[in-house]
Every structure is written in structure tokens, then in C-alpha cells.
Image (cartoon, rainbow, N blue to C red):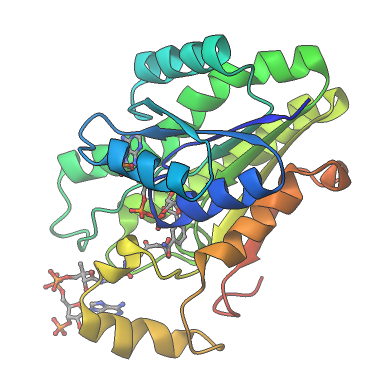
Amino acid sequence: MSRVALVTGGMGGLGEAICIKLAALGYKVVTTYSPGNKTWKEWLDSMNKMGFGFRAYPCDVANFDSAKACVEQVAKEVGVVDVLVNNAGITRDMTFKKMDKVNWDAVMSTNLDSTFNMTKQVCDGMLDRGWGRIINISSVNGQKGAFGQTNYSAAKAGMHGFTKALALEVARKGVTVNTISPGYIGTKMVMAIPTDVLDSKIIPQIPMGRLGKPEEVAGLVAYLASDEAAFLTGANIAINGGQHMH
Ligand code: CAA
Ligand code: NAP
């Protein structure tokens, strides 16, 4: 029987590639869309036309009750979640001087609280069944910091602290917890960076001289979700074109 993979934010640049990769490998793929998303139906229809029978459910990952309702509905209509990819995230870039509490809170709750909100709904079931994969999508900027991203860098660094602590707690029960830290990938999140900043300050820091592709990150997610990756836990895997080595 095929495993169920829940990918949050699957209608975004990275999430879509992850959904497609996991579906191609035979997972039943479920994703989420945020309550304000007006185009989720079109996205689902276009994926269906391409042969991907994804299911999608409304979920504000920043809100615990919304995450709970979403996962309950998934369990009822699709099945229990075997693989959770905490992928949904946002940026609200500004220098710390300009950073207000609203933009701090929005980024912390969507990128970090969401990891608790979603994982809490699926972890006990994984432990009971003796198999599970939790994959947290962090960022190179959580590893090295980034100008204009005190909120995002803090949230993304926090995700990996969560990964390491939970990995210890669940290691003996067949559940692995890992972080992926992508560098700059060509999605709308990166395209929102002013072009002059991207060209003059960011691309020159990437030894490969290019942005990453969503498919390159999706391949890594697929490996971490697989049975072969059973001995890999608590890791933070960098995939950044050589921008940051540690
Ligand atoms: N390094 C050094 N200096 C920088 C800089 C950088 N990366 N970016 C901006 N600056 C400098 C400018 O050159 C300018 O300097 P001067 O005042 O000497 O001319 C100064 O900062 C501008 O400061 P302001 O407070 O006026 O900032 P602003 O309102 O113009 O915007 C910013 C600043 C929001 C940080 C903007 O530069 C920006 O959006 N930068 C990109 C931030 C970034 O990399 N975000 C990543 C998004 S993608 C992502 O997050 C995905 C992922 O995980 C990798
Ligand atoms: P994206 O195209 O902007 O997609 C972000 C996704 O997050 C969207 O599908 C969005 O859903 C969802 N989302 C945002 N807020 C949400 C909320 N409150 N509840 C539920 N879903 C929400 O960005 P991306 O580049 O694919 O990024 C995906 C992840 O990778 C993020 O965590 C990001 O921080 C991380 N990352 C990206 C890069 C990069 O260079 N692109 C690098 C490192 C890490 P809706 O569309 O339905 O709102």
C-alpha cells in the first residue's frame, strides 16, 4: 500500500516540485493551501491534467487549530500521514531597524510555530506504527544569517534545533527527523528580491554562479523520505551551490 505524504505549501515553487517527485515515486500526495489562496482549484486542476491526482486541503500552518483540522480531514479522507514535509514558509525582509513586531511574528509563526503545529498532529501516529519521516525545509540563511532577515534567519535556525531535539526522542521508533537547508532557488520567493540586490549581492556569493532548481531540492526530499535513509536522522543537509560550507 502506498505511503501518504503531506507537503505543506505544495502550491509554491519548491512545494510543487516536491509533490511531483513524491507522486512519481508512488506516494499518495496531499498538500495544503493557505486560506487566502484564490487559485488553489486551478492549480489542482492543472496538476490533475498532468496526471497527478493530488488532494489539497485548506490550512493555515501558523494556526494550531487549523493544522489539527487539516490533518484530521486528511486522515479521514486519504489516510494517516507517513511522511510530513514542513515546507510552507514566508519572508518579510527588512533591516532590523525597520522590523516591527507584526513582521517578526508573521515570519516566526509561519516558519517555526508551523513546524510544531503540523508535526504535533502526525508524530504520535508515526511512533505507534513504528515508521515515519519528518522533513523540515529550512534555509541557508538560517545557517549563516542574511542581511534583512533577522526574523527569517531566527525562524529557520530554530527549525533545526527542533529537528535535533525531536530526532533524539523518536530515533528508536523508526521515525527520522531531518532538516534541508536550501540556498537560493529560483521560485517566486527569490524573484521578489530586488533584481539589483540579487545580481550584485547574492548570485556572486554562489560558487556555481546560478540559482538552484526546485527539482534539485525535491530529489533530496525523496531520498530522506525513502527506506534507504533510515539511518539518517537529526541532520541538516545543505543544498546551496557551494554558497555556505560548514
Ligand atoms: N549586504 C550588504 N548590504 C546590503 C545588502 C546585503 N545583502 N542588502 C542591502 N544592503 C544595503 C544597501 O546597499 C543599502 O546600503 P546604503 O544605505 O549604504 O546604500 C542599505 O542596505 C539599504 O538599507 P535599507 O534599510 O534602506 O533597506 P531597504 O529598505 O532598501 O531594503 C532589504 C533592504 C529588504 C534587506 C533589501 O535589500 C532586500 O530585500 N535584500 C534581499 C534580502 C534577501 O536576501 N532575502 C532573501 C529572500 S529569498 C529567501 O529567503 C529564500 C532563502 O531561504 C534563501
Ligand atoms: P513560495 O513559492 O513562496 O511558496 C510558499 C508556500 O508556502 C506557498 O505554497 C504558500 O501557500 C505557503 N504558505 C505561506 N504561508 C502559509 C500559511 N500561513 N499556511 C499555509 N501555507 C502557507 O516559496 P518557496 O520558494 O517554494 O519556499 C518553500 C519553502 O522553502 C519555504 O519554507 C522557504 O522558506 C524555503 N526556502 C526557499 C528557498 C528559495 O530560495 N526559494 C530557499 C531556502 C528555503 P499559498 O500559496 O497557498 O499561500
